[in-house]
Amino acid sequence: MIRAVVVLLVLHLAALGAALAAGRAGESPRRQLAYYTNRNSEGQIMLADVDRGFVISLLKHDNYVVNMDWSPDGNKLAFTAYDNTGVFRPYIFDLTARRLIVPANQTSGNEALHWSPDGRWIAFNSYLGPHPSVQLLNTETLNVLSLDPPNMLWNMEPTWSPDGARLIFTGRGESVDLFEIDVNCPVCEPRLIVDHPASDRLPVWSPIESQLAFVSDRSGRSAIYVTDLNCVDCGEDARHIADLSMISTAMAWSPDGQMLAYTSAPRGVGSSIYLADLSCADCPPRIHLISQPEHVDSVPSWSPDGRTLAFVSRFMNVGDIAVMDIACATTEEGCAGQRRLLTQTNANVWSPVWRPG
Image (cartoon, rainbow, N blue to C red):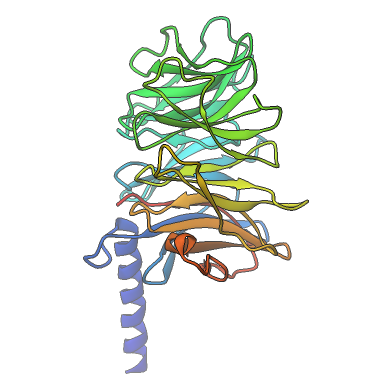
């Protein structure tokens, strides 16, 4: 009798895990989060149901996975991993077919790769060639197009328009500026979007079509700015959002385009996560610090419903995936003590990405 119960329990857990991977566990909208964990050189891509507290292993992958992104339908997961030949490569894992797809002869940078909103392309930084460039991987044919605009020393850091038809990237010509191309004509001359003698980098396109966040040192120090892409002459008059105390940052727009999560360093070592409330276009942005002083937090990622922020949180050299209901940012008490740990594995964890839907 006991043996029969054990067998039934195992079968139930296997069925629940398969349903979770397929996005059919229960009738409510899924709130699932993928992340990578590596312990003692044994790596896995995990999938957590944030509300039900259930976690399964999607893929065993010992080579370090440094970033991930979902297809718009949530059935495939693209990621960059450090392979055994000493280079980073893009991969695609098909959850429905349980199949790992390895595009041939492609090397990439360890910066983020981005799936287009229409599902046709994956854009990533590549070091395959004489200089760094943005490459576009066709998700059906696995053919690759390389962006190689004339009179440009390098180009990288791509970000997609909400409809997937256009791409903005950082390019090095006479200065470091932001350019836009139509992905249906990757060999066409790119359009200069943000032109300034200073260095303008790290563009992140908002879900609101006309808004673009980027980092610039035009004031003499690194800071985040937002520009209106419909305003032709607004490049130099971009809206200042926040100064940064570190050279780079990770930025993520909320799904409604009203808030921008970003990282900066309020102390000597590490980073914290801030929320910039941009809902009032004519007001100074309201900035909320949601990290705790004793933690080093990074890589913010918004849930599709905009309710929750996931991030990597390190304390005493131990990293975990944390989630936080961002409603706490607008309360009088603030977000102190509001984070919830999804992982407590004493392993290296990173790259949290929410599954669409």
